[in-house]
Length: 68
Image (cartoon, rainbow, N blue to C red; front, top):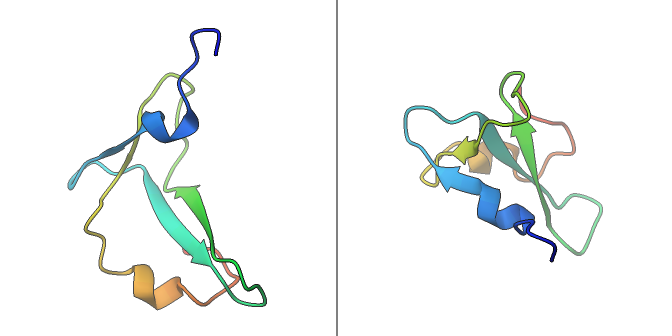
């Protein structure tokens, strides 16, 4: 792996400082897909953080439109 981390190792939890939000796309597909949408511009060297306990995911889980 030439010193690079797998992409999942770069996602960590932050209740108050999340900079990405999960988006579950399962409409028109038998296989759900999870995308992480930036909540604002994120510099290349900044760690990706999301709230593992985000309760709003159900509001956009069956949509094909990315959350605002």
